[in-house]
Image 1 (cartoon, rainbow, N blue to C red):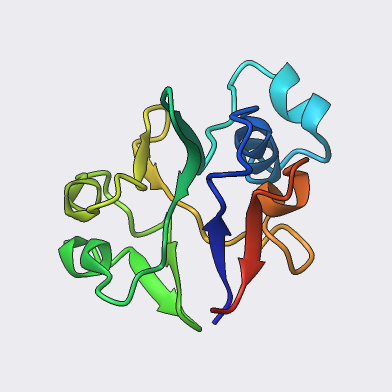
Image 2 (image 1 turned 45 degrees about the vertical axis):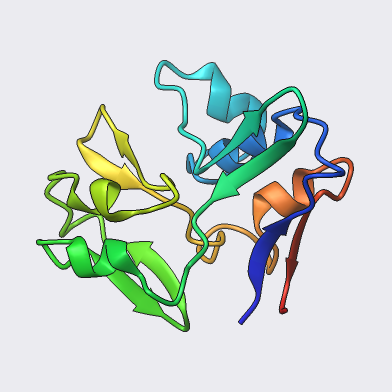
Length: 144
């Protein structure tokens, strides 16, 4: 299964991956429309910066899947190895947030549902938006 990987040596900490991700998951037709509304979209990836290294953090769709096991509502589902959230079932309890060892699940405070990377399976043509938008190709979508 293909996954998103980050080469921290190439990450410029430009945060463009966050913007592309947020726009792609906003439901808007383009980035301008996504960020011009009242509600700002939430990225499902975040860039961590330090003096020595920069890197993007997103759901790793790991083998253990503690978020899925921790979800009391059964809202987190696995399809072809991709962990995604069924927002109709999500009750906003946050157990998946507490279960994720990488801190990759976040709460959308407006609708009290979780947000997490689903590899853009619903809204992009074969490649996650963060990968497509990375100007330095620090983020890749590949099988390893």
